[in-house]
Image 1 (cartoon, helix red, strand yellow):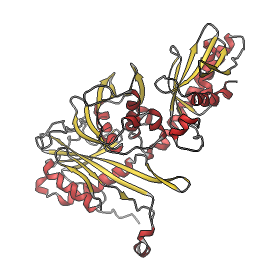
Image 2 (cartoon, rainbow, N blue to C red):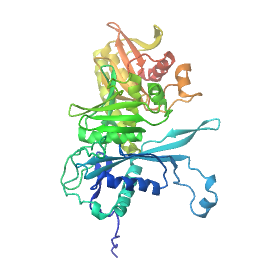
Image 3 (cartoon, rainbow, N blue to C red):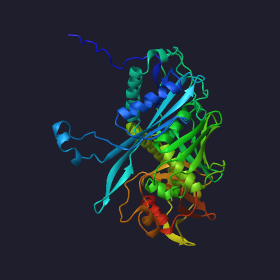
Image 4 (spheres, rainbow, N blue to C red):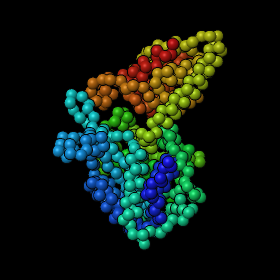
Length: 473
């Protein structure tokens, strides 16, 4: 017996569209911002959220935290013992309305923020930020679309033209601080491309951290805006023509090992203002962090902010793809390093370099007496076999930019005390620079540095070097 089609599944609504591009989604509503705004406010209230912020001038709605009841008992048990159950999860949303088509239409972007209560030892609990969850954003957008369709009078909606997947970016007088994100016009359905972790890469350019991507500007611009919302930055002004997001940090100390290591705490205080500049670069984009005077933020702080933004690009639904991307990259790097090492050993008559952990001017280094051409691939192969991912390398400069991808080391105390009091520094996700320095013709020193190429505390550098030393044999 043939299945009977079910009516009302994902109903089409003339004038309201769910648009997907580059792995990100938003609503395109063929109604003025002044029409859409009160209904978006009403939607979140209907979902049981209190509003922490609803600023019509900037088009930003920020809900307060609400407990996530997923997985908790339902029915009579839940009603009788409601106060005894807590999922240990909290969630909130940030909605941003953007004008387009001279104020005749509205784009609605949605960012999800989650928090998880974790036991940090001795019975103490700590709220930790959850990973970005684009799946929840997509679900909420679909629910919001259905709500708007049911509540905005048909007479206030104009049907979208068939080719209107991508409206032109314009500014409406009702919301002068926000401009629309550009999207490439296509006929029919929008082709969805999924962003991967390696689409955005943080590097050091002229002693300043920047984030680069080969993605086109039209794709990167809205992605960065959504990621800012996930990382708890309030967008007070968005100027697509100039590529500037004016933001205010609204969160608390994230308490992450990575943020503490990179020194983001020095600038990541609630209320601090920044400008996130999105520049055209080599057919892609370059993202920079400036202060309100358009001067670069100090390096550690800028690095930490870029890490938060990049973190907002990758959601849990892409973990498998991300893991496979890392594995494929590791396999390719390993094969390349093995081949280079075999060639170097053949040229050296089968000799292999041996290493000794020493201290030079108070800095731990691995010393060896061998040609640079032999040491360089050997160090690379040792890194790959020691749970490091090589994000970039420069043989001419002798630098490997790596991130630790192994199991985090245990140890008492918090990360700051570990960093300065001799505790572990090998924590999953932390970045380092490995510098292979040719001191003279046959003397090589291998240094472990922070991502900016500056010396680490001695115990930290020693810990990194000890991790790779056994794999150098």
